[in-house]
Every structure is written in structure tokens, then in C-alpha cells.
Image 1 (spheres, rainbow, N blue to C red):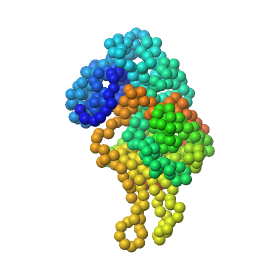
Image 2: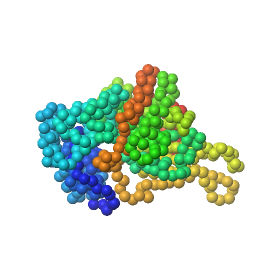
Image 3: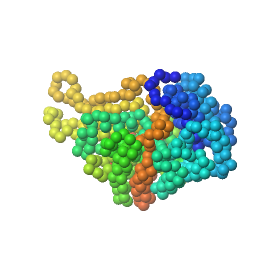
Image 4: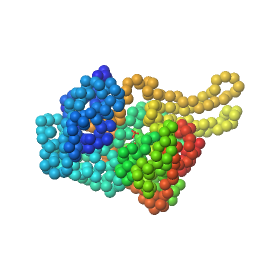
Length: 491
Ligand code: BG6
């Protein structure tokens, strides 16, 4: 066990619907394990993995162990891994009938003293029915909490309906709408950077910032999620949640305190201030792309259509948008959002491009490149401030951009907890700051629908891009890019 100073928690029951699903295996069990390994939770919690079909417990535990070992072989071999697996119980709940739920009631009976934390990791169309079955079967009390995994609906109407149905069983202060990007270390550091440093906040507005660029590039394709992905596309899968949340953290006003509703009120104001897309702006301010066959890191990869085995799909695997936050602080500052699958590498960052100096006093007379602040989310989490520096030596004033780097990997040697670890612990401790409130979710859908509706109205074409390139437009290194108004990287 690592020796780190940690708060500890009382026992709890963690009940995962979709307990044998991909997300639970890849993220949720390893996250809980690492919190145990770090001593933040003691081995008196219990996990109930809810599955629709019957499964063998030993095979299931072997899969859980494999995913724990992926974060490091030593973890899988540790005594704590054995202890962790002992805490897991499989419960079959095949439908929403009282008979099916009696299995869960029986399993939870000996653990009634501990609060129930429900994690809904099924398609969101089932959330309402699960919530109401839990209520009818008397499994919810005022100590209970529920975590809702994305995507929450696929339109404003469906998101509202989910909110309504879940709200009939849980109070809003019991609901945790998770977006794992908010649990990422550098994303949280953005708050510290902005609100614990005098320097940046002074220049954080349209007077000093020329544009903001948010990029989430992935080298992976759609993996085993063809059915879901083809219904969503990159706009709903990534922009509606992750990219918008990042934009909110960059653009929001300082909250009064770092408390859930103060932070969420500020994020909500940003979402309301986002300029809606129209038939006119969508053509020049958005790009949709879909990957074709190509090569990534020397390996040939198939096209999106081959991956999903559906050859007439027009679903986008790449989106670039130019948007504006119409308020005093951000008047006229473009926010470029871009995300895509099957790009040359996994690479996500937020770049704040400052305005150039007002006047060049140096003899070369050439334009002086402007400062930029780069917040690198992944890989190699770091923050860089790019500034002009004199090239040493005689021969007049020659300068070039040099980055001041705060490299997390070099400066903080401990293992970086995964986003889910942080967020799950926030649920246990009852802190909703990093979770979306109902009105926030609905506001994000309202804006997203201006894009999807405008795309439909103008029959926006999907541009093809080769897997292993940076999407439609030119193939350039992200580190050096500037984007044109369409959102393409051009330089
Ligand atoms: C998920 C999306 O929410 O985020 C996936 O559904 C995507 O399509 C993933 O691959 C990216 O997360 P991360 O943490 O790997 O950047």
C-alpha cells in the first residue's frame, strides 16, 4: 500500500448497473481498486455488479483482475487485489420486474447500514426504468446517490425525459452526472491556474486573447462500440460533453467559492452565452469528417465504414467548430473546437493564443509571434507558457519562442490517479462540483441541437480523411498549428 495522506471513508455499497460492461471493467473496478490500494477506502465497502444474464463469478473476477493488472502487473499480484475481488458480488437482475429486483434486495439486506451508491452504466434509455424500479423496491433513501454515465440521451427532449424520470426517484442533490474529462488532472489544474494565480486572470479576456483552441485527438477508432457510435457521431460523443465542459472551464467567470452550485452557475452562464449556429454560419464554421483506410504508427487500419460494417453511413468521426461566447469578456474571440478519431496520435490540449505585442521595437521589423499558454491534457500532462526569448550571443537582438514548462510527469513522481478515481471518490464524499447539474445538461443540448439541426437543413456533407492524418484539411503537427475560420489547421 502506498503511504500517502488521505481522508478515509465509511463503508458503502457500490451497485453498478451494466456491471459486466466495458466501462465498468476498464474504468470503474480499477478506479475503486486503486483507491483501496492508496488506503483512501478501507476494505469494508461492497461492490454489487448487476448483470442481465447469468455469469460465472470466477470468470468475472478473472476479467476484473486483468483490467486491474493493465495499470501495472504489480497491482494485479498484490494481496489487496485479492481482498478487492472478495468485495465483489454478482447479482443478476434480468428485467425490471419485482421478481428480478428481489435478487438485489436479498443481496443488499445484510449491508443495510451502509449507504447505497448506484452507478448507471447502461444505455441511458434504461435509466428511468431502473430508477423507478429501485424506488418501488424501497432501495433508495436520503443517503443514496446515483451516478449517471454519459451519453445522457441523444437530444434535448430525451435528456429532459431522463432528468424527469430520474428526478422522480432521486433528489437533484443525489444525482451525479459524470463527465470523466472533469476528473482529469490537468483539467482541474486549469481552475488552479486561472484562480490561484494573479498573472493569468488579468489577461483572460478579449483584450488580450486572440483565440482559444481545444483539441481532443484520438488514434483509436470506434472499437467495439459501432452500434452506439454510429447513432451518435463525434458531435454527441465528444463535443456535447467533454469539449463543452473544457470550454466552460476556460470561459467561465471566477465562482464565488469552489462549491458545486457556484461553479455550476458560472458554467451554465457560459453555455447560455454560446452563439447558436444557423443555416448560414454552419457552412463556414463547421466541418464534419469521416475516416477512410490509412496507417497509424506504421499499422494499416480500416475505414470507419469497414469498422462498423455499414457502408452507407454518413456519421462523422471528426468535427471542427468555430464558436463564440457572446458576453463582455469574450466578445469576438473565436473558440476553435476540434475532435476526431483515427488521428496520428492521442493528443489533447487547450491552447490560449494571446494577442501579439502592440508595436515591434526590434530592428528585424518582423512580426513577433504572440505568447501562448498550452494546457496539455494527454499524453504527458503539462502546462507550457510560450514566450519570446533573446537568442544568446552578439549580433543584435534575435529572438525566438521558448516554452516555460511545468511538466507534471517530471515534477510529480507519484502515479497519476485516473479521472474516474477522483470522480468516484467525490461521489462517495458527496461533492457535486465536478458533476453536471440538470440545467447545465439541458443547456448543452440546446446549443448542440443548433448544430445538428443546421447540419440537417443544409445537408452538410461529410468530408473524408485518411486515418492517420489530422482530419479534413492539411496534415500538420498540432504543436505548430494555427487554424483558419473553418476550424482547419492551416499552418
Ligand atoms: C468517451 C467517448 O466519453 O471518451 C469515447 O465515448 C472516447 O469515444 C473517450 O474514446 C475518450 O476518453 P479519454 O479519456 O481516453 O480521452
